[in-house]
Image (cartoon, rainbow, N blue to C red; front, side, top):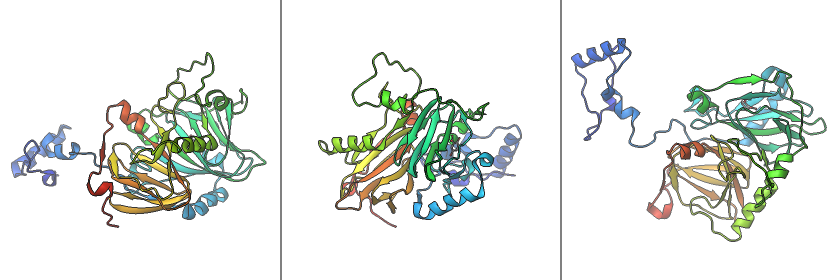
Length: 374
Ligand code: GTQ
């Protein structure tokens, strides 16, 4: 079949602008049989002037999702499902099961006394606790107890399993992984633990007690792995840090008071492929719009407000999740005049930065406010 490329033509010096002729169309067909193609038929498409995201902005509203997630408790067991998760399926990224860009995310739910089989994979993961008591995660023999807004890492290659203690309550948390990215790299391996469950071989919460003390490193603590030794970042300490910083700084005009979770041994990102941050928007704060490369998945940890993404308004409240695709203009607004709002954010910034792909741009016009069309 003759290939249509006319719609990729651009009448601009340096861009492909070849009109179809019967002879060329026949030529393209012949090339195709040799598993080759003429670059000028695809050049303008595969080298856009600027990033073209397939992802669309979405708000996943917890109010609507929560009942659906709880329903899965009655429908499948973790034994049969592997993990009982309802994943976020961006309408533009269904082919790779991504929430945005190359990031996967899902809501996992567990009843007290349930335990998911221990496994490991090439994908790296984070977990952000939404509700319930008694949740814990075991990573390479380290057990982390987890409460709301705590954030735990399960870096690539580590054995990990999730469970809820028998005396706890049903727990829901957000998983975030680089599965689509690792699959795009064609580098994903998966293994189930030979004993299905791993032994806890360290004191509970030891990694946070060892590495999570601001300004202090354990003497002789040497950690050379490519991910943070502090597997759990607690909400109370995070919130306190944000308030400390907010008390003496205006923060960023684009992000408010934003702090990145770091690997305390390097001050670099928590994992090689996934970054995370928590940002505080003061009462009434309305940030200026900007855009940058990288995919961003926001989780409303506290408060309510809205974001304007590519000129459209998206309202959010506590526990909602929303995404900002790569190179999309965005600004955030805290709707409350009296309370702060906190946004947890998972991103692929470490990849963008490490590979030299990070770029940002301020929305210069109109005092940094986008015209809102919807
Ligand atoms: O717990 O490692 O939501 O491997 C999807 C795939 C969670 C996990 C998910 C996973 C995990």
